[in-house]
Image (cartoon, rainbow, N blue to C red; front, side, top):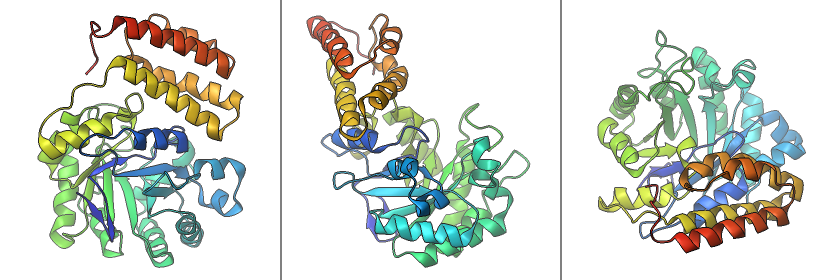
Length: 342
């Protein structure tokens, strides 16, 4: 189990704030997929612009949308102005966030060019001012998500994480790559280990959470075993298999793997995801969204000839339902002889 400040989580598995993907429908689907040892411990919203939060713009209100079934939820903010970040943190607390995360790890140009995200790694004084302002503004735990540094010559693994804990940050999540790497190459577990060790020496009650390249229950356990991190945040690895949290929670708790979710059940998850989108978005947006998500789901539904191509041409909700129902009927006729993707 994982504790962040006074928030006790069910297990040490967290859903990352995946820009463009980690919306309310997806979080609800992830939460619905539970096994004997539970599911996701904490799910995070998409990253939120604090100025847009305070103006309550339509786009940002969608990104921040939550409800009673979406608990516990973290809201992630990105920015460099302490007063604005503090005010946005207060908004997040008032609108259901049990923890608030400060994004200091996003490598995307449109964020870093505004001096937010991982650009803060190069400005530790600004990063600490932002962290301090958020901690002092709210009564819920404030966390920070970082990278190893901007590039190979500017690692911050032994400095900034400790300083963040000094000003009251309740947990640090570290993606095991530099900003310059973005998502290339393999995650660097020794870098995560350095953060675990440096924070642990001075702040043993501040957990460090590892992030990067977790695509299976084995990956989650390996990261925890090798680095000593207290939890694992999963992002892109869960986009095509939101049941990963169910599987990983069981493996971490028991050392045993659950039977793979049958392909027909995986297809039902996709349909449930689409219907959940329709609860919160109009038909046009829901259809466009499922087209994007199919590119992630497809790998875990094979063999399904023409899946991505055929979904790309679908124009309406009923057309998708008809296509998907026919596909599921075909899958049902193939069970149990199909080869499952583990």
